[in-house]
Each structure stands twice: as structure tokens, then as C-alpha cells.
Image 1: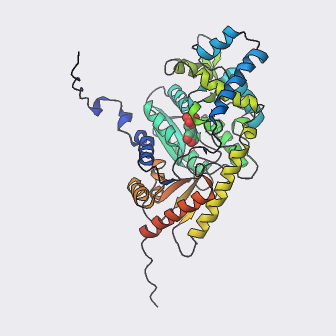
Image 2: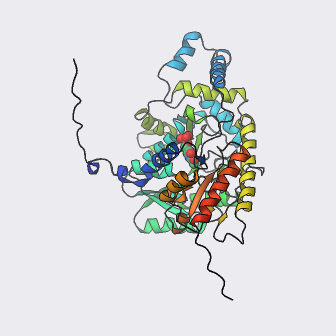
Image 3: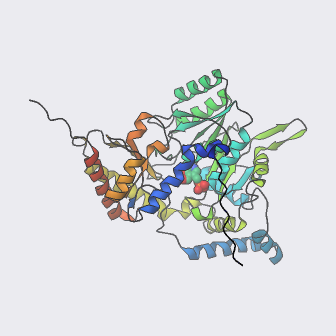
Length: 445
Ligand SMILES: Cc1ncc(COP(=O)(O)O)c(C=O)c1O
């Protein structure tokens, strides 16, 4: 029996959630789509970890290592081991003790395992936190700009307006932030939190110095807001000493810490977490951990994070005695070398006196830097760059609405494979920049 395909029902986007009309939600899809249409282009676009050290066999090894941990260290029998790995599980996750050990080893953060919710990537963690903080239309979240598009998009999903605060050349400008908070309050809003990436930010590559971190914590206390510290890149230093995380300096419980194993483990596992050790008062009884409130939301969105994926991440942690710094020695060296190649190449291709209007920052680590150019570097320009020049990058307009962002592009140096590819990518980029730059007016003697 054959059936005729049903005529698809036509719905109007006006009858769907307002976020679906917001460009933030198109952003990731658009960028992925351009990349997939030009597979041969050299990509400075994606903030992906290098694939050089991917090893499918390691997935099996990690899984076995965690299985052994459950048996030997935790004393579980075969039925309990298979239940842990294969059954629905604890909403807050099963590897919280190992996450805590890692935070202590690598980040100087000491927290109660119960304050951790293991999530499906940091993206879910961001969503859970924003969902919890949004109570009514007065609530807003501030975000240091340029801002990771995943924050802007998740805020849209929960109808939480984002007030962007320009971070300036040092990553965060406390005067501007204070002014923005006061202005928001005067306008009748209730600022709940400020989101930022203090270490090697996506997209700017900028890190905060220690004094600014301390001042920011003081500001959060004085202004009664939370800080949402998102830290996917902190351990990828290009040589300098790491600054302490805000959470490790947070004596007053102002910081909600968002973590991920996407860049330090593998993105395909889709495992992240949130540290939410704030206490939530409830008129009916004893205070609870914010993590438990987030877990209620998670139970209605994703139920629990795949225990198999958690086990893979756990195996990597166990194999490296809890240290992702140790686990990522090859990756750290690769990103460091890529950054050095990129900075040297930029200086060679764009000598200051011959290419006015072209400049860039020199981050101390991470995956990204920002290149300013003397023409509009928007989605249309990206399309031309991919099609005619074979090089991909990300227009900064996806992260910031400021006029200067129109003439900026983010270069991700984490995934190109080696100096030759970076050099060839730069050669292609230099050709685009030369062709798009108006020739300087001739000097009249
Ligand atoms: C700043 C920032 N936060 C969060 C994420 C999302 O991480 P995950 O893949 O764990 O969801 C990314 C990924 O690029 C990121 O750059």
C-alpha cells in the first residue's frame, strides 16, 4: 500500500517564538553552512579544537578506564556498572566528583560536588542559568561585548534582554559597566548578572588582568549582581602564566562558573558543567543549592547528560590524574605555535606603513584574535572571500553591533593544520584585503 505524502501544513513565523526571528539564532547555522559549502577553503572561521590528536581508539580506552574506576575505586558490581552507564541517571550527572578534582587541580577552584550540574556542553549550562534568572520582564543580563553568540541566542530563548557593555581594549571597562548597570536600573530593569569570558575570550582573545578580576568581584558585590564566568579556553596559554579564575577568587559567592570539555576533551562528547554553589532561600524551609534548582530545569529539557559521554570524559580525566593541562600538552603547544605563525605572518603581510587601517590584537592564548580592516567585513564579504579567495573567517558583526565591528573579523587559529596552511590562508586573506581596500589618494606635491 502506498500513501500519498501529506501536504505540509503552513505555519507563520509570527506564530512561533520571537527568538526565531532574531539573527542571533541564525548565526551559528549560517557560519556552519558557509563552511560546508566551501569545504576546500582554508578556515580561520570555526572555534574548533585541532583534529590532529583525535584518536577514536582513545574513546574505547577512556570508557574502559571509567568502567575500571567504577569497579575498583567505587566498588560497584557488574549490574551497578552497567546500570550507571546504560540506564537513565542522576540529573546532576555522575562525574561530579571528578569534575571537582579537575577544578581543584587545574583551576584553583574548591567546590562541593553537589554544586555541580553536568550538562550537555556549556551551551546547556548557559541556558539553564539564564532560564533560572529570568523571573519577569524587568530582568536583564549584561554581557561584555563583543559577546559569544551562544549567550545572546540562549537569552533570546528565555525572553531575557541582553544589555551589551563594550569591553574596550582590556576586556572589561568597569566604569562603563557601572554606568550600564545604573542606566538599566533607572530605566526600570533589574540587572541579574553579567556574562563574560575572562580568559582568552571568544571572540576577542582578550584576557582580564588580576586587578580587574578583583575589581569586578567587588563591583558584583557592590551592585548585587552575579557574574557568569565562561571559561572554555583558559588553559590554552601561549606562554604567559595563567591568571586565577574569577571563581577561585570568589569569596562571596558571586560567580556562577560555566565549564566545558569541548575544547579540552572533545566537542563530540557534548559534556560541560556549571558550578552553582549559591544558596537559594525558600520560605518553606532550608536553603537549597542553586545547582539543585538548575537541575529541576534540566530534568525537563534534557533529563540527564548521556552517561556514556560523561564516562568518556571521565576516562580522559582519570588517565591524566584529573589534570586537563596535562592531558592537553600537545594541543597547548599546537595552538601556541599556530598563534606565533599567525602573528608573524600578519606582520609580514600587513606592514604598518603599507596597509593603513589593518591592525590586530596579540592575545596571550586561546583560539582567537581580531583583525580590523578598512572595509566592511560582513556576511556578504565572507561569501566572496570563501568563493573567490578560498579563505573563511567570522564577521565580528555576529558578536557585536558596534560600528567598528563592521570592519573587523575574527580569526580562529586553533584548527588550521600547521604553518603552511596558516601561511597559505594568510596569503589568500591578504589578497582579499588588498582587492577590497580603496587605494590611498595620491600624495599631491
Ligand atoms: C565562550 C564559549 N562558551 C561556550 C561555548 C559552548 O561550548 P559547548 O560546546 O560546551 O556547548 C563555546 C564554544 O565555542 C564558547 O566559545
